[in-house]
Image 1 (cartoon, rainbow, N blue to C red):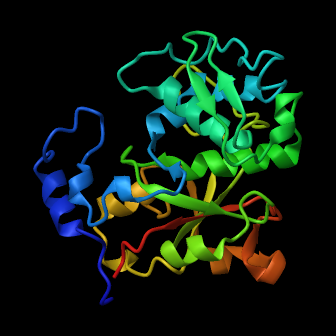
Image 2 (image 1 turned 45 degrees about the vertical axis):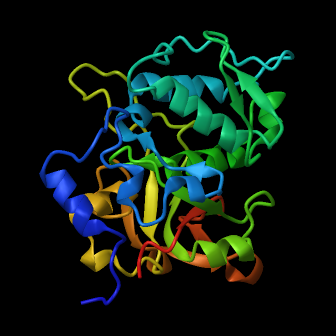
Length: 283
């Protein structure tokens, strides 16, 4: 048995078995205080709290496909009409979360996009597809944004701070981030925008995976064998995952090292793959 352990997993397991601990009215199954490192001390810009029911919702997937066919914002910085997305202000905040993550993945820091329905402003961050501001984006950009959105999905909708890295100028491996967040968690790849899987088919669950979302497990997360299954599901990188992803096993087996210093993965012939790192939750 590994001598490492997942941070506070015993407490979390008790919380889950008891239905919950504390006030979870925001949909998070545990409180910030349940973790050894409080959320407010983590200053990396990404957070993987996108719920699977929102991500896989067929209306959401249709909206994303539609957005991929043209510019993401108009000359005034406004997003196009998105009638398939849930309306603003719903309890699960699906619309707000998917747009926040989409704009963060797509546009560079300093750029913004406004939701025409309620005038909410969403901030750019990683800039994986900056050309999308002016027109339909390329297949390569679609793959980058898909991998990024997948890394924001969380099987339990429990926000965890992450840092993303890949063979792209905006997310190259950063030595300071790697030192502070040493746990390589998973690598994702796919292309949701060009999927031909039919949506909203009678008799098919409305959250049935709308494209093949690939994920492999990084070797760095070597406390996996000690983790309760429900916590592993939160990471989306296991065969029993709640995330609806296609688990490919270990990244070293499923992919080939590539890029500068062989620091990145080429998986299934796709170089547009994104790895997530987490803080030192295993110790």
